[in-house]
Length: 178
Image (tube, rainbow, N blue to C red; front, top):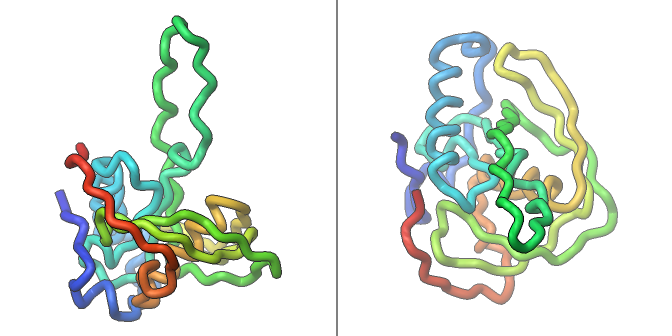
């Protein structure tokens, strides 16, 4: 399994390269996505991951959409429902094409900056234009957590970490995940 690289790794501070057209639809691209998915699946608190976070300098990020949903209401004494199945969205060569004027302060963390959390100011809504694994283009809009994910992950692709602009940073020790 690919390890998630941590702050200090050069790949996290470089601008990622666009995925070249000849890579679309190949086993190589599918393997990069599979490696990213496996690394993110292992991180129970993680909702998204950019390719540079596993040391791959391409403009790709994935989102575990199922982890962005609020937990189900559980009635005391009732059986706990199983977690929803993994729902991975893939964004290749993404760019933000539209944002709301309104911004909100949001709590944020990062799998490449373990144990540090802070408050960032993000747009309340954002629209991303990207490509799928077969090269077809699409647009996706989101508000709240999805807008925050879009901005956070595209920051990664531009060599920016949330700690570069977050306020009120705190350090929290966590048990290992997995």
